[in-house]
Image (cartoon, rainbow over all chains, first blue to last red; front, top):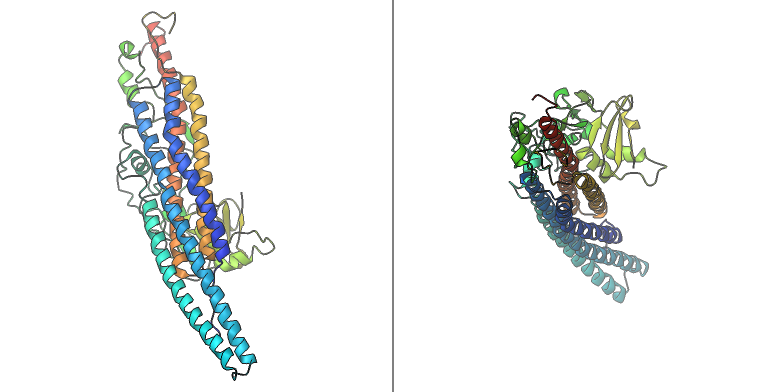
Length: 368
Length: 107
């Protein structure tokens, strides 16, 4: 009986993260359930009625339902991972038992029939467990894929949330095809993120009643992601960051005027209609200074593993997966540190610093 | 508006609209914190899965989750910023009406 390779992976670690995911799912359910009531409370306290208030309530309702809707898929993922972890643990234990039995058989000199039977039985059990683990893995992956698809549908098409997000500048809508979400592999492998460009000629979707068509552009609420750019920083490839696609971030209030006051209608005079057109959700639009470098620039080849190793000495540094996620979804800047391209991901609080001259000196760290 | 003939004023309590932004901002921050937990858990699981199919699926889930929650955070932010802007709009409009009523401006 020859030795078998035990499946990799960490069942206990998986259970640890599954518990965290469950907790996050519960928090999402609570936040979603509370969103509309909070807005209703604000409306009530302020005695705020009219079309703008109704539009805000509709958006809050859609938002709350969507956030609450993430809980289900997340819970299904955690449940699938728990089951998978059990299968993985079983396979690992049985392969280890098999290998121990094989060692005992060797020690016994292959002449001990009882020992041989034990080893053979252990090998059979290990093989079955590995097969079951493989099946569990495929099933788990399918469950996660279904849950992932559901995560992308929590805000209905045509609803206030999706309509508002679609009205944002190209690449800002996290549900658009231009938003990279498919970068799923780690260093050294093909990193096929969804890095396609959104056609800049596409007209933005309407803002579902929150904003008149004559309003200034919707606020640019954050810098664009790497995935929204016409290139990737992954795997030593070209990163294109066209100057005309830079995110302009600062927000100011625009002039706005009167609208539906409960008792003010009789007193409205000429000119108020124009003010009403801009009231009140069209308050902000973007202007200011670009935060990103003008591109394109060449990103030198360096692997995530090398980047991780450069975090040596910092045992709590980002993992390869966190680095990859940051590269897939982060924001890029070449202006903050001379000689380095910085890719940062706010959610994880990870930054990857790419040394353009000496790529082997690139590194990653947590910044928050 | 008391003391101004012909102007009854708005009933909207703009101070409440302004204070409401704090409530929405708190929800935005909660959403961002949830997003961090979700993404960290999914990425963490991907790194420990030990099977390529599961790793890939979890990484994709993390990417989708990031998109969904970042969108939600943006909308919370949008609502949060719209509330004080609405208050400003009401106040500004009321002042404009007062000015017109008193003949202080010539629109």
